[in-house]
Every structure is written in C-alpha cells, then in structure tokens.
Length: 353
Image (tube, rainbow, N blue to C red; front, side, top):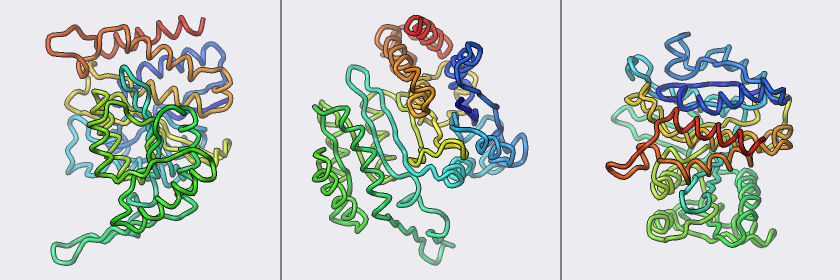
C-alpha cells in the first residue's frame, strides 16, 4: 500500500491537482494499493489557516506517508507578501526534513521526446542558512557553494539510468569549470562516470548550454547539472516546449527507504499564479507528469504499470485535443482545465480497460 500525502498549496495549486486527485480517488475506490490523505495545510494557505506555512500536522502527515503530492507553493489571492513573506520556505524545509536531495524534472516537449533535468536540490547553491551571510547594506553578502563528491556522484548515477533510456540522443553535463572549483569537481565526475559506465556525457559550459537549448533543433535527452544551473535551464527547455506548465518535478531521497516517512515529493514545476486562481483555465500537464513519475517511483504502483497508462493518456490528449490557452495561437480554439482533465480521464479509462 502506498500512502500519499496531498498538499495542494497556494494559488492555482489545488485546482491544478484536481484531475490527478480524481484519478487517485478512483483507484482507491477500485481497491488499488493506494491511500490518499489530506488535503493538508501548506504554504501561504497553511499560514492563513494555522499561522504556520508548514504546520506540525502537515509534517506528521508526511512522516506517515510514502510520498507527497504537492501543488504550487507561493503567493495566494488576498494575502500579501508582507503578511506571509516567504511561503516557499515550507517546500525547502520539507526537502531537508526528509532529505529529498535530488531533483528530477521531466519536460514534455510537443512533437519531440521528453527532456530530463537531473540536479542536486540540497547542498550546492541551495545551501542552508548556515552557509549564507546576509548584507545589512554595509557588509558584504555571502553564499558558500559547497559540493560533496559523494553527492555529485549520486546525481550522475541517476542521470546514467535516464541516459540509457535514450541511447540515440545526447546527454550533457553542464558546469562552469573555468570559474568554479565545484564545477571542476562536477566535470571530473562526469568524465569518470562516462568511463565507468560507457554512457557518454558531453561537457558543456552553462552559457553555451543555454545557447544550444535555444538554437539547436534537437534537444538533449538528459541534462545533469548543479542545482541552480538546472533551475534556470529547465525554464529554457520549458520555453522551447511552449509553456512552464509542461514540466513535472520530483524531489527524491535516492535511498528509497519506504516505511520511514516521505521518500519523494512530486509537483508541477510552475508557480502558484495567484492572478489565475479560480479561472479554471490553467494547463494541468505538469501535475499529470508528476503523477506519472509518482507511479513509477512507488514499487506497488509501478507493478501496475500506471506510469505508462498516464503517459499514454496524456500524450493522446496533448496530440489530439485543442490546446489550453498557454499553447494556443491567437484566435485558435482552446480547452480549459476541466475539459483537459476530462479528456485525460476518458483516455485513462480507455487504456486501463
């Protein structure tokens, strides 16, 4: 049995998850080995409900779960940044509590194959407050970027598994070895991993990588890079795909120690878009991608091949149904969030029948 803690988050977060949650409820009713708990308060809406962006009850629910399904965390209508200044810290805290130290982003590129971005999400540029010095306007600000060789190797080990799925496409390792000692460690690890596994990783400086992602027709299958570089480059890939809504995100603990709290958090990678909250127009592709990756991660759900079913249904809808507004040319017909979800759920009924 897989227990999933539902954290809808802020802005469009809850409505973006409506389709995947409906499918999970349907699986529960059918007796599948899945239990969905929540929704649990989190982020700005968590602060509005409880006075905390990450209430104790939410943390406990995540301790009792195997994985977390999250909506966007950030701004929310009617609550100012002065009232709740840093809701994103709730997500960062969850990563540290459960050691969710590696990020895997999947970008669905219409007319092409996926692009997978693998990066560290704790350590490096995403260090804790003990490695930062804030400026008071007089003294200098400081951010210490520290990478452990063992943790870098761990990122590459995961990237190798993805690269092997796409033997005819490039896998690139992105760094800035001419500037950073951490990037020189990164590059040495890339070359050692390629020599040990036979999986080639092309060394690409981060500025050149940004150029290639915009300029080259064929995108790489896998990008493996330090956390901040990966954060930026994943948005470049989304721009090539056509929308930030085409990205699903997983932050994982690669130890996969099920039965000891959340092993991973799955979410769409876009923001909370408070100005669109309630419009029911947003593109839920990222949430469906996140759900597919959740199914692939959990052993008892992976055994049911639910990941494949979700991806087939999603691909069918993206390829054959009118797009959501973010992907539509001016004046073209579109579908809203609920119509999109209805099409995916109908396609899932077909592929799972």
